[in-house]
Image 1: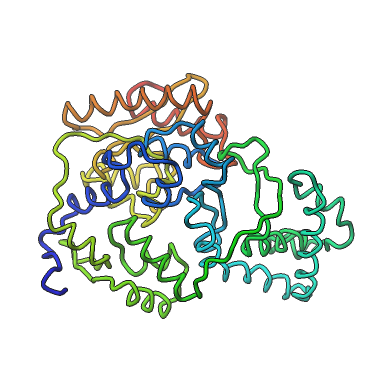
Image 2: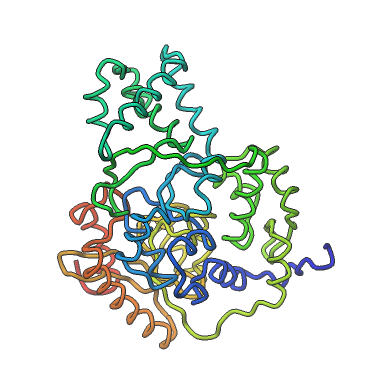
Length: 410
């Protein structure tokens, strides 16, 4: 396999950006796929109560909210605690496996309660009581409703617990049941861009994988979605230890490649082979993506995707807070960030700043895409939030800043 490894000189930032773009299905290759297939093939969508799960589907497969909400209602997609215990929207093929891969994160919450004097057996007993209550309900029950029924079986952890993020024992019990596939969260509105949930019982069959096999499968998916990643990036996304990462890398037969800039990337053997014949598209392929889109979130590498070093320096140090975690949403062309945006519900359109010195076809295509996505947001979503705490008032400063950079005034 060593002879098949690409030369470092060939693995330029431009090629690797376009390669990641392709691996994310943003080059048109995902057009027309079902929602569950988009998430399975190209990466789960980080949710946190924002619009990213919808824009992920729209930007890759052209799917609107109706198709996404129908897939959610039919349990073809679902939001579940996944890698590192973080919530992602994913396709049904990954439900059982992802709960297996993220099970260890649930035990961390149990250990926090244990340090506060709660025996794990108490949490287990509460979990069984939750299942009993939900079994007797006609529909989903929210946490407040569960607390009313369970009464003093839910223990308050007082001020000390609140400081540690566990005000009662109920969230931990709910989390354990979710990770065991015995209950699931249901949004009352049927939408993915909010964080109010009820709970209902579930009987998800186990994955059939042991923990080591689940970690290997998670790494295989991650490398296929990213097109290759460094060891620190792998550990950030997966939460694996160094030893677990090395075992998973060996299990999937990943190949170590050196980029033109001297960075090390692990790639799947099949991707090494495909990359050898990969050629980036020559015409603009504009997409507006969320700040939490898989293209930038999976490797947290937004800074690498700004081609112009002068613009990158201005953006990174000039108040736009574009770094590992983005404050603004992004305009992207073939894997390279060329602008920033937010939706302005007061104006009913997108406020955007395109970086200077773009080629005329690229700028024209970007402006057309800005209008197209803005109209879709207005008609399909009503607003586009980064997360559940985002609001039109809260993002006003960012909107005015982008308008100012674009020469439109505050």
